[in-house]
Image: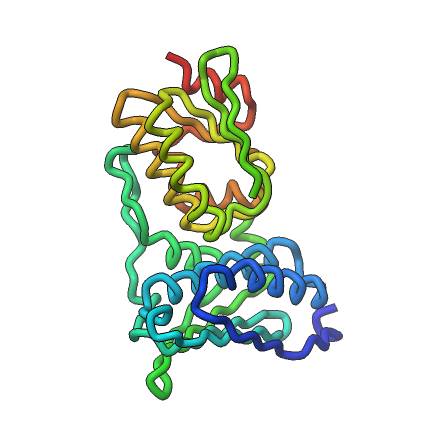
Length: 151
Length: 113
């Protein structure tokens, strides 16, 4: 039952290296399993963390400066929160418009999908800058995520 | 992620993927897949046994499909319609530009001549 969940907040610090993504999603999957979260939520959590961290590693300049990425997972029953912090260039994913609908394979845009996935698979995405760091909070509501998964 | 490339009797090339098609796997897959896309005109990418699909993986599939289409070829994706991976493909709008089918015979028909 949601009210009996006692999984404590978990924190993980990543080097800005794509090799960190596999262990990151595995860790998120284990968190979801231990918390007894539904499979659709586990998948959404893993996908959104992968996309958020990959964006930071590939595009924020964090890899060049060796800036670490901090990720925290916590339960706020019945929801799950994922907080991603990095010291790369300021980047507000909530300001990124959805990609245009492709009309043909020749015209299909390449890229912009990572943020679109986060927006589509998480229940809420909130961005703030704090002490010169990017802080992205993703909220996952089990009922909302399950409804989206069956769309 | 495991990758197997197989020529089938119909003349098509089947690229079978198994495991997690995550960012790291997609980066490694990009170059060999581009080679297949450049050389072949009828390609079925079987992701039925893929359990995770990241945006970079979708990017690699779209880029390969563009290469194939650019020379008059066809690419189809073989994937069940009711799992998490299918949901990722739908979210990306992939089905609007690449056929996504659930059965192998339909996939081979989609890329035939």
